[in-house]
Image (cartoon, rainbow, N blue to C red; front, side):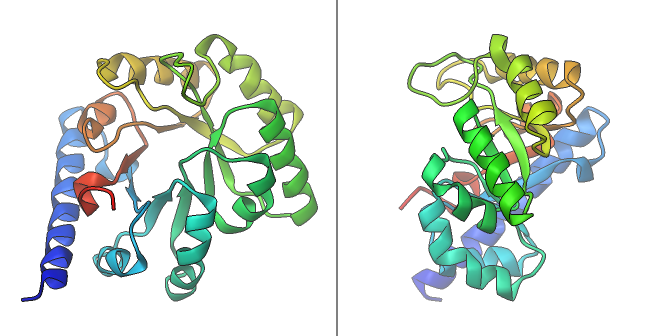
Length: 228
């Protein structure tokens, strides 16, 4: 067996393990496993690494960069029409038109300028990808996202004033922090704003996120291996 085939076997085996752990985590807290969406994070991975995961039935993927996604996903989406592609990295205002055209979900709406640009492009094009608002639960200076105390007002701006299709919230807890504190905070903000979707949990902590109500977990390394 070649090294590439070994990698394919590893990735598909990893995918099955992650799916099994998600199912177990959901059942542990009395949730329907189908209520948790696995977002396979394929950033830095070529199409050749993604194809075995598609062949194993995975259809929801996450990318960090608009440009990288534009190079590999249009053909994959033509081949697999039921793919749902999430943007999970920062979105620059000058990339909004391209992102709206390419992604089915934009998880990183984090500032008024971006929200207004999204509203304008959606109005112009009639294309309306689902949106999530990124909350900087750790209030880290170097990290994107609206601060927790400003989240309610920003949600109102996006959803009520700009009429964006806001479906939920996302967060990335600080490295080294207890993630459950951040997951609980995000769930509280979502609940009081009537938002049902929570994108939280990554390779190191996705079973914990499921216990706190995650509807989407973003798992890259645990499926694809280390970044390239």
